[in-house]
Length: 302
Ligand code: F2R
Ligand code: MG
Image (tube, rainbow, N blue to C red; front, side, top):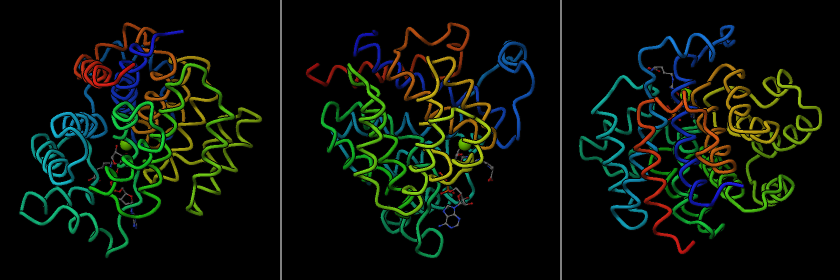
């Protein structure tokens, strides 16, 4: 079993590895044959997308502000977006960043999305891994802080709950004696939205047969939080190591970078940095993410 320190590094590095391997496939239906064996080694660069860019910004905000500061986090997200517009951001979340840069209060900017309904996209979940490390081993603080960080851009209950579920899952994956049943029982008590309640039932039945095609159909592969977070958890729970988890996540198609980023965080938290294949470590931002994992580890009493 990897050390808890290695698992902190692995959780952060797992995000960027999944994200960068999935980014060239985002929106596709299937993975081209021998993608990891032939296409990836031939690529000159493996850049990360908005998933990692915002994960870095979130971690830096927590560390710099010694906890959650919504105005600081919103400013960092907006500056990160403005610095590199080509990282695959959705056009809707960009409105929040534009408003923040124009001086609109961060809460107002997020709440006004989709005519006041707020976003139910998976943007709050894809960037939440540092929260689980920051709050570790306090589970309820993890859930509370995950919700807070989501609302900087996502105020729809499904968008917020997606971040909470992903952060809670990373927390359980980090524990010394990870037991899938304990994670599922926790989610059963915690979930409040109808969308995620339905997907939890689907997850349990998909786990019984381990059929990835069925999981794709029943759990989803979309940019909606309740169409991707449970898919990532499925890939992690049926995968028997870091590499297998990522392969399954990429094969889900659709929002591949984000499903693989979330699944990669879970597998990295469980199996540690040492389990990440060496030829996948050349992705942009790998060292930066592992270093932030170390900084988050050092502030714990572990
Ligand atoms: N967006 C992408 N990839 C496509 C990029 C195409 C191109 N750059 C473009 O669209 O111009 N990837 C990244 O987006 C996902 C995370 O999205 P996030 O941060 O949650 O964004 P947003 O805009 O808040 O929500 C995503 C979409 O979900 C639908 N939606 C959300 N809430 C809704 C609501 N209340 N009513 C109706 N629809 C809602 C909208 O279609 C949003 O655009 C990640 O995949 C990341 O990699
Ligand atoms: Mg995506």
